[in-house]
Length: 122
Image (cartoon, rainbow, N blue to C red; front, side):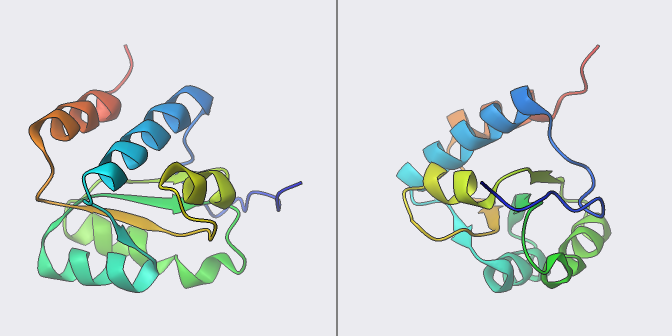
């Protein structure tokens, strides 16, 4: 079983949004459009080339990621926590859990998928 989801991990994606995000991450990995890890995510945010940041809510300790939401908000980049770091790692074909940043060079289809995933539900 996975580790418990930390209540500090906000906003946390619901089950349907998590599936959509995992599909998006998998597609981005296929296009080689992912930056993996908290350090790479920080770099892409600082350089202004990140479009979306995905973090795992069961990261231990979560504090190693908590600077990313602040940085993402400062740069007006959407971010979200997903419940499982293992699922996030599997979505891009690696065995290790990671935090991911999707840089600006997204293919048009991925950009459209991302836009649809981020639309508020009505």
